[in-house]
Amino acid sequence: MQGARSYAYRLVDVFTQVPFQGNQLAVFTDAAGLDDSTMQYIARELNLAETTFVFPASLSGCVAQVRIFTPCREMLFAGHPTIGTAYVLMDAGRVEASMSEFVLQENVGPVAIRVARDEANLIWLRTPAIRWGNTYQPALCARVLGLSPDELLAPAPQWLSAGNPTLFIPVRSPAIVDRASLSAEGMRNLKGTEPDPLCVFVFALTAQGVYSRMFAPEHGVAEDPATGSATGPLAAYLMKHRLVADAAGTRLISEQGVKMLRRSILHVRIEGPAGSAGIYVGGHVVSIGEGSIRIPAAVTPQHPTIQP
View 1 (cartoon, rainbow, N blue to C red):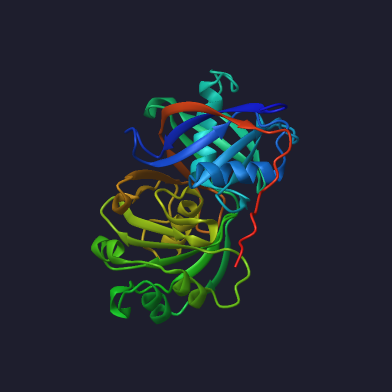
View 2 (view 1 turned 90 degrees about the horizontal axis):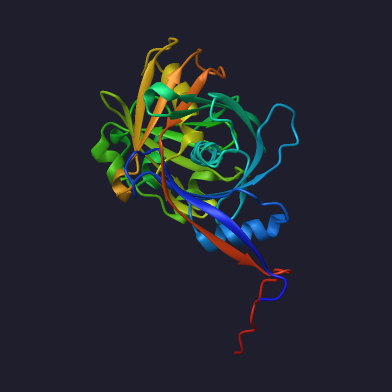
């Protein structure tokens, strides 16, 4: 393939300590030379929930710039790509071994990272500023999920975002979470005229925190095994409705991906009140493999003409 260039990537599982669980991520550690459309083609080709591309940082104080793509769009911010990329950069020596705190540049802005060496290198990200949006009618939310209204928990479903708009819908038990489903038509009925892509996060309370699932068909992801970008806003929602303690030092776990056979454990540490930026989301990472993709000098999509 004349003029082609190879780009190496690492494959990791995030929010797990068990191989082939958690959320898959491909990290291209040196993406220099890739343009926006080619990165999108690569993300679509790999067809993971997200793929990240690492560039030199343009913001002072950041160790690298990270761009995040789903199979169909670029993201402002996402949790498992942030934590997975932080792990790969440390493992590849791109972050000094002595550093337990550093900052990644993302489209949402700087994202602070902490590494808990005393917890088997648990990697924490600080949730970006959280925005609060509209509440939704419980009956409508229940209908589009294939549930009955009495299966929802009392707090009204609500839109929140830390860079990835998400509708949070509380239900009464993990068994109800597992029965939920969301079709493309249901998403259209739910969104109405909402212009931005929307994720739908369904959860139930547990003794350790929550049991959850997340649907993101507008991002090309029917269901996501682990959603770090939603877990910080989830904690804010739980504090607002007094479903967890609104106190510094509170910790909880979101267990996600079980229905998909990709069990994920997302840790949450609260260091500030609801709505503040003092919410950290953490997880472990497992290295799975590595590979490379050969990119032609010019990537041009081919759309063959279909004859009648």
